[in-house]
Amino acid sequence: MINRFFFFSFWIAAGLSLMFGCSTESSKNSYTVSVQADGVLDGIRAYLNVNEAGKIVKTDTAVVANGQFEFKGTVVTPELRTITVDGITGQAGMVLEAGKTNVVLYKDSIFKTEISGGPNNMAFMAYKTGFQELNDRMNALREQFMAVREDAEAVKILRSKSAVIRDEMKSFGFAFVKNYPNSDFALMVLDGVTGQPGFDLKLAEEAFGAVGDEIKTKSYNLETVQNISTKLSNAALSQNLSAGSKAPDFTAPNPEGEMITLSHILGKVTVLDFWASWCKPCRVENPNFVRIYNQYHAKGLEIISVSLDRDNQKQRWLDAIAKDQLNWHNVSNLKFWNDPVAKLYNVNAIPATFILDENGTIIADRLRGAALEAKIAELLD
Image (cartoon, rainbow, N blue to C red; front, top):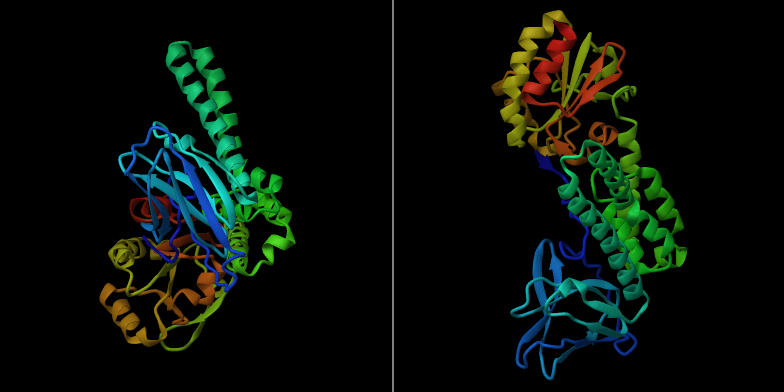
């Protein structure tokens, strides 16, 4: 599947996002990170790192002396960073922010490193501690499972308890934001958890509403605020596109410029297919569409393919229709990912399909290959 967006998983030990800013007030924005690293040998190098598009980049280097080392510099915006040390497995997360930050690094368990300093690191440690407590509870249940796995009743009870903890984990980020609404780090957390598929929209909206206006209106947070707003809007739209919902009607031009309206061409079953001539997975899928259409068109199947080709790719679109033998309704506004129909259906990855009944109600979506064919057979055989 070709995806419009680069999605990242949020957690300190996995991936970190960077927010940029600029200022000439270097003294106001200076930072010092003082690290106590008992047991680490003198002369060992330590690094301050940032994640840039999935690549770990070293931004500063220090040398351990008497079990200590220090990073100094300037920072305009709070930035998620990690500290790594040669010879020590793993990394310690922190928020790089103006002022003094104290770090107690444990060489035998770097994840347990303690951070103290400004308000964002206080929030960071609260997040880290709270999430670790949930992990510890889940790990304890796993150990109990091993001890009673032959006892069906005990297993049932433990499964119920683990389900509760999983729910707490899913909602933890949102609850955290509501508890720390006046920290930049809370906004970072919310940006991360709303980047995960299937997040709870209601909890996300409540958490976003709780974030203080002072935080939202900071110049360096505006892009993050816009990102979160967009994800909330897209999630709300997706909820209106689930099975049982009415498919949004639309009108779009076919290759000859004739305007085709979805509600006017509905069959007993209609497949709405989003694709593009440049999308290899789509082109691979097209023979399956052709086979299904040839087999079920006489029984009431209609297909309308919406292409996300660019404005300068009309001929390429037409050639693909002819070569792949897409002998059904084809439309495109030739606006790439900004196609209004794609936006209407919250399509950010192709191929994407929606199956509609004769009334234009969505029956299923995102089916491909054998699963799509089986669904059409179920509906029309």
